Image (cartoon, rainbow, N blue to C red; front, side, top):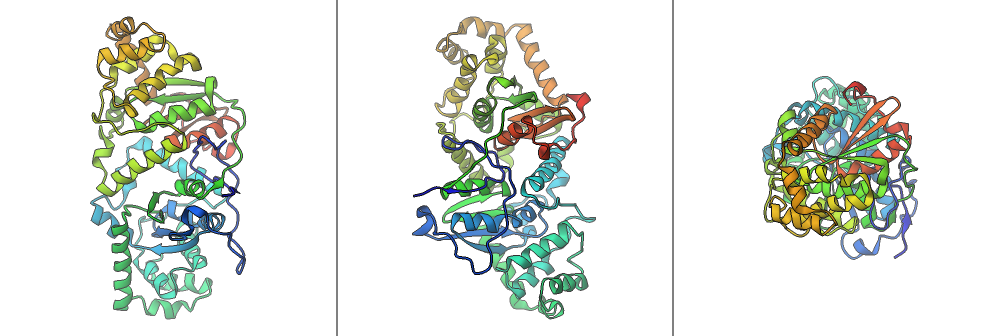
Amino acid sequence: MSRRQGIGVIGGFVGADTAGERLAPAGAPPAPGAAAPEPPARYRAAVPALAFYFDVTCPYAYLASTTVEAVAARCGLDLEPRPLLLGGIFRARRVPQNLSEVLPAPKARHNRADLRRTAAVLGADPPVVPPGHPRRSVEALRALLVAGPTRMELVRALFRAYWVEGRDLSDRAVLARVLADAGEDGEAVVARIDDPAVKDELRRRTDEALERGVFGVPTFVVGDALYWGVDRLPMIERACGVAATDAPGPPVHPVDVYFDYASPFAYLGLARAERLLGDHATYRPMLLGAVFRAVGQVNVPLATFSEAKRRHALADVSRQAAELDLPFRFPSRFPMRTTLPLRVTLASGCLASAEGRALAHAFFRAYWAEDRDISDPGEVAAICDGHGFDGAALVEAAGAPEGKQALFDATERAVACGVFGAPTFVVHTPEGPELFWGSDRAAWAAHAAAGDRRLWTGLWDDSAA
C-alpha cells in the first residue's frame, strides 16, 4: 500500500517509522464533487467510514469539527457525523456533567493551554467558554437531526455559534437565526424539534453511541477501533497509512522531563523524549503519588474511570507502544510502589547521558513489559547490575537519609513547577515555562523547545519554575 502524505495535526506521536508530527494547519475539506482518494486497504474490505460522535457543548469536539473532514479525505474514508446528547452519555457512565469543575487547578490550567495550542495548530479560532457553560444543547442537536445530521457545514455552524460567537443555542429564536445563516429555513426546522420522532431519534443515537463504547466526545470509530479525542486523529491517519511529516527542529530552549515508573504513559514518554530531545533534556524523577496528593488528585486515576474509558485507556497505551515499537504488557501488580527504583535512579546519576539512561528505560521495561516487581530490592539490584552499576550499593544508598531526601526534593520541585501527572515536559522559553502533560504531547514539547511560538501560552509563572 502506498503511503499518502498527510498532516499529523496534533498528538505528538513519534513511531518507529515516523519522524514527527506536522504542525501546519489541517487544510480545507475537499471541494464538493471532488473524487475521494481510494480507501486504504486496511479498511476497504470492512467499513470505509469514519464515524464522528459529538455534542456541540464540547470544545475539543468543536476543534475536531474544523479538521475531521480533511482527515477523512486523506484517509479515503466516508465521514459520518453522529450527534449525541453528551449529558446522557455522562449520566450513563456516572461522571460529572461539567468535568472542568472537578479538575485540580494545575490540570485545569493545562487544559486551557491545550485548547489554545490545539486551535493554533489547526488554524482555528480558539474556543471561548460562554457564560453558563455547559449550556443546553438538546434543541440544537434535534434541529441538526431535522435538517440533516450529515451536513458538516451545518455542524460547523452550530459549533461556531456556541464556541466562537457565544450564542445561546437553547434560545429557539437564536437557533433559528443560526440555521437560517447556514441556508436552512430556521423557523421551519425549529418548529419540528419537539416532534416525538425527533426526540426518540436523538435518544436512539445516544444509546447507540453507548453501545459502541463511547464515554466522551469527540469520539471516532473506524471499523471496530474506537479513538477518543481530537488528538487521536493523527493516529487514525497513521493506521490508514497516511505518513506524517515535519519533524521538530533542533531544540534550543531547556526542557525538563518529569517521570515516575508507576505510569505506563511515562514509560512511553521517556522513550519519546529520548528520541526527540536526547541529552538536551534534563530528566527528573518524582514520586507521582505524592504529586497527586499535593494537587488533590486520586492516587490511581485509572480506578476511577468508567469501564468504557478504562478499556480505551488500555487500548490507547497499547497502540502508542506499538507505534514506538516498545514491548508492553499490563502488569499483574498494579499500582506499583516505585520509591526504591526512583531513589536508586537519583543515587546512580544515570540520567546525565543516553548510556546511563538505559538504566531508567530498563526499570520501565521491567515493570511495563516483563511484569517484574521493581519494588523488590533484589530485582532492583539485579537490573542495576545488568547495566554496569553496583546494585547492592545503590539499594543501600536509596535507604539512606540522603537518598530519601533527594526524592522528596525532586517531588517538591515538580509540584512547584505545576506538574500534576506523568510524564510532564516543561519547556523553559524566553517568555516563561510551558508545561506539556502526557506522552502524546512530547512532540509539541519538542516543537516548543525548537522555538514554535504557537505552542507558547504564557499561562505558567516563571518564578515557580
